[in-house]
Length: 441
Ligand code: SF4
Ligand code: SF4
Image (tube, rainbow, N blue to C red; front, side, top):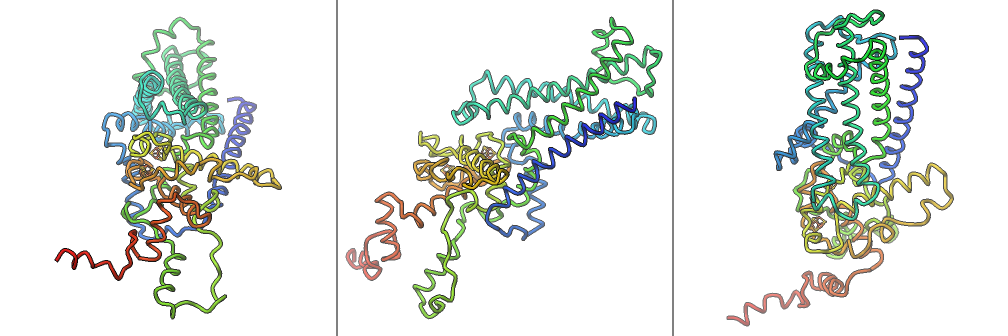
């Protein structure tokens, strides 16, 4: 490879890595805007979750066909990227198929395996494109996916198809040139590649010079496409490819039905029941805020969840509130949280005097009507394949409404005052609680 090409390749790689790192650091900064939450306990269970839920995609296998198709794309993404290592080294060192002379038949076997995966990825991407755009799957046709989210899914599928086609065409031209022993083409013999060689009849009519130009063009477009994909990833729902792993590690380990208590409230109740345990007036810092009004009131895990959401809609498809026609969609809760966090992040980047246009997650993005529709059934948490907990965000926003703004439906208010005064949701005094037994005897 010409030295100029090496320099261009180096600059291209450095630019791609720099932009990618910059965006990843901005996402990390955004996630850390959240409240602190200690999630470093029970490490063996956490690693087990990473293996089962992230690597093993355990929840996907509830639907074996879709899980298998997803697995093909997933393996394609992970394993074919090993081949990218060789491409990057070739680009930087000015070599051509650097590993081929050292790995012999293993090289031929590996590239054949990558080609099998490439064909699989193309097939599955076409199936997913047809399913997304021509078949009516309710969760993929919801209004909340209109616009960018729907295009995002299509762009990625089309890009993956293009990358795989470039990879196969590059291999096909390379092996055809080797077979012809084309003068001036100094590639190390690689053996035959099963799938790309099927394209040889289509390429046979081209001259050696055209084939060399095609091979180089595919090589450059392939690696430029990968760099573009890398930089598109952090802007897309496909960020879950990376974040599914930390998200599985930090997933909640308690049973879904166990609601997180609020220590500040527990203390208040304790002081009411046992006043002698209460600290002297002014000895304790008053709590600044109950629940969450904006993204910075949520925990960093809630914000990591928002960036990890694949927008698959499995949560919404299982949500009883959504199924019965209520406005709530747990997927939208996650999308809104991410959108809001991105806006807050941008305003930090621009050092805005009025951060994020004075809006908040509560009401400007997620309405009271949505929050109140939640039955806290946990179906969304149960269904999510990437260990996301939309209910936790709903609960925190609802806690803010009730505890900071005293905004609750009238029916709830009477229940709250009963709990406060009678220690039960009913209006009877605790002293009268056993009277039913006497009345019936
Ligand atoms: S917990 Fe709430 S949001 Fe989640 S599925 Fe149940 S009703 Fe829907
Ligand atoms: S929260 Fe989970 S189940 Fe719901 S859309 Fe996001 S990834 Fe899918």
